[in-house]
Length: 447
Ligand SMILES: C=C(O[C@H]1C=CC=C(C(=O)O)[C@@H]1O)C(=O)O
Image (cartoon, rainbow, N blue to C red):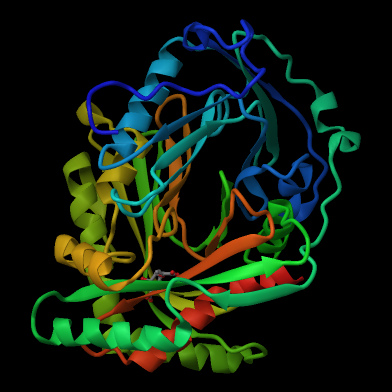
């Protein structure tokens, strides 16, 4: 989408009260009411999802899940973020909202997922569910959203009898993605040479693997396992993009922003003792190659946030984030938004994307090198994924440790992993690191 015309929201067939004519004129009617949820621990929310088209953004049992589709906004190209934001805003301008809970994630909510590259075949998508259920600590709520209809948020919507059973994927086989694993180190070596020649400082290169499942893949299967097994991550599902990302691009809440920047990785072998893990963590924290990779990522995020903030806190030293498969150098950057220019969370995500954690430094040469040598369309992998609410607040992660379910073949899924490459990178070690980053999705698929 490049021009000034706004993308028109698409309403699912049969959902428009007038049978599909002039649906854009129908205001969204949104109602949020408090509920009590049984404590199902880390999977409380994802266990409520009734069908195989789940929407989710959950961490440590809190967050939001959604189902049904009140409407969908799709965009393309450079303006994929701003067009989506403007279309969402124009829907909100006419929405009729009753919110009896008033927490982040209550009232109107859209789940979104955006392509890494403006030239991708994928663009951006915002999905507005018919039902949203959320939890934050001891508070829980249900929201209903409909175009022109007033659907009461009743407990009946959570009736387990409405849920279709979740079936496992069956036997999983794998095949090469766009570039075979054996050929990928040569691409990394090419990048290292160009970095050493001074053409850029860092580039993040990714690869994909195709998994074929014995039965149609139900994303709820993946969500349940990821939410339980990777609790320090944000488990997400939006329009066929599913994963558990440890990296938060931006959270915007009541004038405060936060970003968890990751770059610099060490593998954690299965069964590693806590003592060994601590030794590895210390090794990572001292590795000049990883510290360099990390510094690029922190600087790119801090620079992008600065114009929007009156004050910021950028840690001088990263900490080590421990995940079951890898450890990362991590920095939590925070800021106070300028009251006069309060941007929406989606506008902030657009300004931050692509950070050096997924693209490189400087941004444009890194992006151009990715286009030239990576050999695949990343689609929505490594793009912003998350949600936005009525006041523009929201949370956007980077779609890492993720998979794209095939819209045309429910037994086919592409898994992705990428690695930051700097002058000191070793191509074979980067391949091994990419394998470690594929572990969460492979584990979630196998069960
Ligand atoms: C690009 C990915 O990870 C990024 C985030 C954390 C650490 C990274 C690294 O150490 O290379 C990557 O920059 C991925 O998981 O696909």
